Length: 250
Image (cartoon, rainbow, N blue to C red; front, side, top):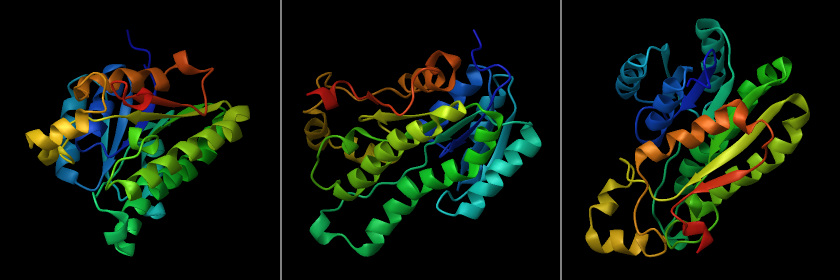
């Protein structure tokens, strides 16, 4: 019933949305969790919900674009929770803008969080996971790293980079007993996109390419995260798993 009992997981972007759902699923499966994001108040709410499962929850305000912050996150997790077994690089940002209208700041904004943030997490946690010869890294990609959509070119490029990083790092760390995989969600309604899905015509457009004709439910992301964090996925590495209602298969 508790496949992650005795484990400790870091979840970035855990203040809301998919990150909060993933963190609560890991805690529900028995893991203690270190919760990272920029919003301390929202992290504390996630921690309160995680603590209700009986697990320890550590709040660490973190800007994943800053390596020093992520390094401190890993150090605090090891010091206060005693170990590190799972790293979920979930933090992400998006801005819908046609490439011809995009600025260098738009590009840097998404690149710094969506891709450099994943690099920072892997770099900071890697030496520890390699030394203990075990660990799970779960990176958050996106269906838009696989399929094209107008206005999302910059975002898609960063998520395609996450998929490539996952594939190569999975190969690189396989001999160390560390598995690196990615989840690629399709459309889930979160704070980031709820305004778009509140517009019926736009929502219909976004779901037109989804065979199931619906968005994902937050409770549907957690079980996949638990699987990738558990021993059940020990023979899987370098893979990106799409959770998208068939969008990438269409």
